[in-house]
Length: 281
Ligand code: PLP
Image (tube, rainbow, N blue to C red; front, side):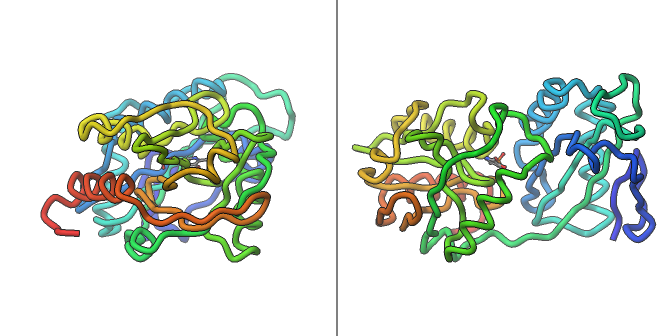
Protein backbone atom coordinates (compact mmCIF):
# COMPACT_ATOMS: atom_id res chain seq x y z
CA UNK A 1 0.00 0.00 0.00
CA UNK A 2 1.67 3.16 -1.25
CA UNK A 3 0.76 6.76 -0.52
CA UNK A 4 1.96 10.03 -1.90
CA UNK A 5 3.78 12.38 0.42
CA UNK A 6 5.58 15.54 -0.59
CA UNK A 7 6.38 14.38 -4.11
CA UNK A 8 7.21 10.72 -3.44
CA UNK A 9 5.40 7.41 -3.40
CA UNK A 10 6.18 5.74 -0.10
CA UNK A 11 4.90 2.80 1.94
CA UNK A 12 1.91 3.84 3.96
CA UNK A 13 3.49 2.58 7.17
CA UNK A 14 6.42 4.96 6.61
CA UNK A 15 4.28 8.01 5.94
CA UNK A 16 4.35 10.55 8.72
CA UNK A 17 2.95 14.02 9.13
CA UNK A 18 4.16 16.62 11.53
CA UNK A 19 2.32 17.65 14.67
CA UNK A 20 2.93 21.21 13.49
CA UNK A 21 1.03 20.67 10.25
CA UNK A 22 -1.51 23.48 9.95
CA UNK A 23 -3.97 20.95 8.59
CA UNK A 24 -3.88 19.21 11.94
CA UNK A 25 -4.22 22.36 14.06
CA UNK A 26 -6.60 24.43 11.96
CA UNK A 27 -8.00 22.26 9.18
CA UNK A 28 -5.95 24.64 7.06
CA UNK A 29 -6.06 22.85 3.72
CA UNK A 30 -8.16 21.63 0.82
CA UNK A 31 -8.75 18.29 -0.92
CA UNK A 32 -10.08 16.52 -3.98
CA UNK A 33 -11.57 13.10 -4.66
CA UNK A 34 -11.17 11.78 -8.19
CA UNK A 35 -12.81 8.61 -9.49
CA UNK A 36 -11.10 6.02 -11.62
CA UNK A 37 -13.13 4.03 -14.10
CA UNK A 38 -11.18 1.16 -15.56
CA UNK A 39 -7.94 2.89 -14.61
CA UNK A 40 -8.96 6.16 -16.21
CA UNK A 41 -9.49 9.30 -14.26
CA UNK A 42 -12.98 10.76 -14.66
CA UNK A 43 -13.12 14.53 -15.37
CA UNK A 44 -9.49 14.99 -14.39
CA UNK A 45 -9.19 18.53 -15.68
CA UNK A 46 -12.34 19.67 -13.89
CA UNK A 47 -11.01 18.25 -10.62
CA UNK A 48 -7.67 19.94 -11.12
CA UNK A 49 -9.37 23.26 -11.85
CA UNK A 50 -11.47 23.02 -8.72
CA UNK A 51 -8.41 22.03 -6.69
CA UNK A 52 -6.50 25.06 -7.96
CA UNK A 53 -9.47 27.32 -7.29
CA UNK A 54 -9.81 26.05 -3.70
CA UNK A 55 -6.10 26.56 -3.01
CA UNK A 56 -6.22 30.06 -4.49
CA UNK A 57 -9.25 31.01 -2.42
CA UNK A 58 -7.35 30.21 0.78
CA UNK A 59 -3.99 31.56 -0.43
CA UNK A 60 -2.04 28.29 -0.63
CA UNK A 61 0.40 28.22 -3.56
CA UNK A 62 -0.25 25.10 -5.67
CA UNK A 63 2.98 23.18 -6.09
CA UNK A 64 2.14 21.37 -9.34
CA UNK A 65 0.54 21.70 -12.74
CA UNK A 66 -2.11 19.55 -14.42
CA UNK A 67 0.46 17.09 -15.82
CA UNK A 68 2.07 16.54 -12.44
CA UNK A 69 -1.40 16.14 -10.87
CA UNK A 70 -2.22 13.51 -13.47
CA UNK A 71 1.11 11.80 -12.97
CA UNK A 72 0.59 11.60 -9.21
CA UNK A 73 -2.86 10.06 -9.71
CA UNK A 74 -1.68 7.56 -12.33
CA UNK A 75 1.33 6.43 -10.36
CA UNK A 76 -0.81 5.95 -7.23
CA UNK A 77 -3.39 3.88 -9.09
CA UNK A 78 -0.74 1.80 -10.88
CA UNK A 79 1.45 1.16 -7.86
CA UNK A 80 -1.55 0.14 -5.74
CA UNK A 81 -3.30 -1.74 -8.53
CA UNK A 82 -6.47 0.29 -8.17
CA UNK A 83 -8.41 0.66 -11.40
CA UNK A 84 -11.98 1.07 -10.12
CA UNK A 85 -11.95 3.27 -7.10
CA UNK A 86 -10.85 6.72 -6.15
CA UNK A 87 -7.84 8.85 -5.36
CA UNK A 88 -7.94 11.20 -2.39
CA UNK A 89 -5.59 14.18 -2.62
CA UNK A 90 -5.08 16.79 0.05
CA UNK A 91 -2.88 19.80 0.44
CA UNK A 92 -2.29 21.64 3.69
CA UNK A 93 -0.60 24.99 4.07
CA UNK A 94 2.48 23.48 5.67
CA UNK A 95 4.23 23.20 8.98
CA UNK A 96 4.43 26.09 11.39
CA UNK A 97 4.37 26.55 15.16
CA UNK A 98 0.72 26.94 16.13
CA UNK A 99 -0.44 30.44 15.35
CA UNK A 100 -3.66 31.69 13.77
CA UNK A 101 -1.58 33.98 11.60
CA UNK A 102 -0.16 31.89 8.79
CA UNK A 103 3.20 32.66 7.31
CA UNK A 104 3.60 32.95 3.56
CA UNK A 105 6.22 30.82 1.87
CA UNK A 106 5.59 27.64 3.88
CA UNK A 107 6.16 24.36 2.09
CA UNK A 108 2.66 22.92 1.41
CA UNK A 109 2.19 19.28 2.42
CA UNK A 110 0.59 17.15 -0.28
CA UNK A 111 -0.63 13.69 0.67
CA UNK A 112 -2.69 11.29 -1.42
CA UNK A 113 -3.90 7.70 -1.41
CA UNK A 114 -5.73 5.32 -3.74
CA UNK A 115 -8.63 3.14 -2.70
CA UNK A 116 -10.60 0.46 -4.51
CA UNK A 117 -14.30 1.31 -4.22
CA UNK A 118 -17.34 -0.38 -5.71
CA UNK A 119 -20.11 1.59 -7.39
CA UNK A 120 -23.13 1.63 -5.04
CA UNK A 121 -25.41 -0.10 -7.57
CA UNK A 122 -27.89 -1.27 -4.97
CA UNK A 123 -28.52 2.27 -3.71
CA UNK A 124 -28.66 3.56 -7.26
CA UNK A 125 -31.39 1.03 -8.01
CA UNK A 126 -33.49 1.25 -4.84
CA UNK A 127 -32.86 4.79 -3.69
CA UNK A 128 -31.76 6.25 -0.36
CA UNK A 129 -33.27 8.13 2.57
CA UNK A 130 -32.13 11.64 3.54
CA UNK A 131 -32.26 13.28 6.94
CA UNK A 132 -33.25 16.96 6.67
CA UNK A 133 -31.61 19.40 9.04
CA UNK A 134 -30.42 22.99 9.30
CA UNK A 135 -27.24 23.84 7.39
CA UNK A 136 -24.94 25.20 10.10
CA UNK A 137 -21.81 25.49 7.97
CA UNK A 138 -19.78 28.60 7.18
CA UNK A 139 -20.45 30.85 4.20
CA UNK A 140 -17.71 29.52 1.89
CA UNK A 141 -18.98 26.03 1.15
CA UNK A 142 -17.66 26.50 -2.41
CA UNK A 143 -14.12 25.88 -1.10
CA UNK A 144 -13.37 22.17 -0.79
CA UNK A 145 -11.74 22.57 2.59
CA UNK A 146 -10.70 19.68 4.82
CA UNK A 147 -12.47 21.63 7.59
CA UNK A 148 -15.66 19.58 7.41
CA UNK A 149 -17.12 19.71 10.90
CA UNK A 150 -20.60 20.84 9.81
CA UNK A 151 -20.68 18.13 7.15
CA UNK A 152 -19.51 15.34 9.43
CA UNK A 153 -22.02 16.34 12.12
CA UNK A 154 -24.82 16.29 9.53
CA UNK A 155 -23.71 12.87 8.27
CA UNK A 156 -23.63 11.40 11.80
CA UNK A 157 -27.12 12.77 12.47
CA UNK A 158 -28.38 11.15 9.25
CA UNK A 159 -26.87 7.78 10.17
CA UNK A 160 -28.23 7.99 13.74
CA UNK A 161 -31.69 8.38 12.21
CA UNK A 162 -31.26 5.40 9.89
CA UNK A 163 -30.80 7.64 6.83
CA UNK A 164 -28.03 7.38 4.25
CA UNK A 165 -27.25 11.05 3.78
CA UNK A 166 -28.21 14.48 5.08
CA UNK A 167 -30.29 17.12 3.32
CA UNK A 168 -29.12 20.49 4.59
CA UNK A 169 -31.26 23.61 4.37
CA UNK A 170 -30.30 27.16 5.25
CA UNK A 171 -33.52 28.51 6.68
CA UNK A 172 -36.03 27.24 4.14
CA UNK A 173 -33.59 26.96 1.22
CA UNK A 174 -32.27 23.49 0.42
CA UNK A 175 -28.51 23.66 -0.14
CA UNK A 176 -26.84 20.24 -0.44
CA UNK A 177 -26.05 16.98 1.32
CA UNK A 178 -23.10 16.31 3.64
CA UNK A 179 -21.00 15.14 0.69
CA UNK A 180 -23.42 15.26 -2.25
CA UNK A 181 -25.36 17.76 -4.33
CA UNK A 182 -29.17 17.62 -4.30
CA UNK A 183 -31.55 17.85 -7.26
CA UNK A 184 -35.31 17.86 -7.53
CA UNK A 185 -37.39 17.18 -10.62
CA UNK A 186 -40.57 19.18 -11.17
CA UNK A 187 -42.71 18.98 -14.30
CA UNK A 188 -39.83 17.37 -16.20
CA UNK A 189 -37.21 19.97 -15.23
CA UNK A 190 -34.18 19.32 -13.04
CA UNK A 191 -33.63 22.00 -10.40
CA UNK A 192 -30.52 22.39 -8.23
CA UNK A 193 -29.04 25.08 -6.00
CA UNK A 194 -26.94 27.63 -7.95
CA UNK A 195 -23.17 27.15 -7.75
CA UNK A 196 -22.53 30.03 -5.39
CA UNK A 197 -20.74 30.23 -2.03
CA UNK A 198 -23.37 28.12 -0.23
CA UNK A 199 -22.60 24.81 -1.94
CA UNK A 200 -19.69 22.88 -3.35
CA UNK A 201 -19.92 22.89 -7.14
CA UNK A 202 -19.75 19.12 -7.63
CA UNK A 203 -17.88 17.76 -10.62
CA UNK A 204 -20.67 15.19 -10.96
CA UNK A 205 -23.21 18.05 -10.77
CA UNK A 206 -21.43 19.76 -13.68
CA UNK A 207 -21.42 16.53 -15.66
CA UNK A 208 -25.14 16.01 -15.01
CA UNK A 209 -25.79 19.50 -16.32
CA UNK A 210 -23.98 18.57 -19.55
CA UNK A 211 -25.91 15.31 -19.81
CA UNK A 212 -29.23 17.08 -19.24
CA UNK A 213 -28.44 19.58 -21.97
CA UNK A 214 -27.38 16.82 -24.34
CA UNK A 215 -30.65 14.95 -23.75
CA UNK A 216 -32.84 18.06 -23.85
CA UNK A 217 -33.82 17.79 -20.21
CA UNK A 218 -34.44 21.31 -18.83
CA UNK A 219 -31.83 22.07 -16.17
CA UNK A 220 -32.34 25.03 -13.85
CA UNK A 221 -29.82 26.38 -11.38
CA UNK A 222 -32.09 28.08 -8.89
CA UNK A 223 -32.79 27.85 -5.21
CA UNK A 224 -35.71 25.73 -4.07
CA UNK A 225 -37.40 25.58 -0.69
CA UNK A 226 -38.10 22.66 1.61
CA UNK A 227 -41.73 23.04 0.55
CA UNK A 228 -40.83 22.75 -3.12
CA UNK A 229 -38.68 19.77 -2.21
CA UNK A 230 -41.58 18.03 -0.49
CA UNK A 231 -43.80 18.68 -3.53
CA UNK A 232 -41.22 17.57 -6.08
CA UNK A 233 -41.92 14.71 -8.50
CA UNK A 234 -38.47 13.16 -8.05
CA UNK A 235 -35.32 13.78 -6.09
CA UNK A 236 -31.75 12.55 -6.50
CA UNK A 237 -28.26 13.22 -5.15
CA UNK A 238 -24.90 13.17 -6.88
CA UNK A 239 -21.23 12.81 -6.06
CA UNK A 240 -18.03 11.28 -7.34
CA UNK A 241 -18.62 8.12 -5.31
CA UNK A 242 -22.46 7.94 -5.48
CA UNK A 243 -22.81 9.06 -9.15
CA UNK A 244 -26.59 9.61 -9.51
CA UNK A 245 -28.56 8.08 -6.65
CA UNK A 246 -32.33 8.49 -6.30
CA UNK A 247 -33.94 9.66 -3.05
CA UNK A 248 -37.07 7.82 -1.93
CA UNK A 249 -37.68 9.25 1.54
CA UNK A 250 -36.97 12.29 3.67
CA UNK A 251 -37.10 12.45 7.42
CA UNK A 252 -36.07 15.01 9.99
CA UNK A 253 -37.20 18.64 9.80
CA UNK A 254 -39.67 17.68 7.04
CA UNK A 255 -40.99 14.46 5.62
CA UNK A 256 -41.55 13.30 2.06
CA UNK A 257 -41.68 10.19 -0.12
CA UNK A 258 -40.73 9.87 -3.75
CA UNK A 259 -40.80 7.18 -6.35
CA UNK A 260 -37.82 6.77 -8.65
CA UNK A 261 -39.00 8.63 -11.72
CA UNK A 262 -38.27 8.73 -15.44
CA UNK A 263 -35.98 11.79 -15.41
CA UNK A 264 -33.72 10.34 -12.72
CA UNK A 265 -33.60 7.04 -14.59
CA UNK A 266 -32.82 8.71 -17.89
CA UNK A 267 -29.92 10.65 -16.37
CA UNK A 268 -28.65 7.55 -14.57
CA UNK A 269 -28.61 5.67 -17.86
CA UNK A 270 -26.85 8.48 -19.67
CA UNK A 271 -24.29 8.66 -16.85
CA UNK A 272 -23.66 4.89 -16.94
CA UNK A 273 -23.26 4.96 -20.68
CA UNK A 274 -20.64 7.70 -20.37
CA UNK A 275 -18.52 5.98 -17.72
CA UNK A 276 -19.25 2.30 -18.43
CA UNK A 277 -19.74 2.25 -22.19
CA UNK A 278 -19.32 -1.51 -22.53
CA UNK A 279 -21.60 -2.52 -19.73
CA UNK A 280 -25.37 -2.68 -20.02
CA UNK A 281 -27.00 -1.40 -16.85
N1 PLP B 1 -21.09 18.72 -1.86
C1 PLP B 1 -20.21 18.46 -0.89
C2 PLP B 1 -20.30 19.19 0.41
C3 PLP B 1 -19.22 17.48 -1.08
O1 PLP B 1 -18.33 17.20 -0.12
C4 PLP B 1 -19.18 16.78 -2.32
C5 PLP B 1 -18.17 15.75 -2.57
O2 PLP B 1 -17.46 15.33 -1.74
C6 PLP B 1 -20.13 17.10 -3.30
C7 PLP B 1 -21.06 18.09 -3.05
C8 PLP B 1 -20.11 16.40 -4.63
O3 PLP B 1 -19.01 16.79 -5.40
P1 PLP B 1 -18.37 15.85 -6.51
O4 PLP B 1 -19.45 15.56 -7.50
O5 PLP B 1 -17.29 16.66 -7.09
O6 PLP B 1 -17.89 14.62 -5.83
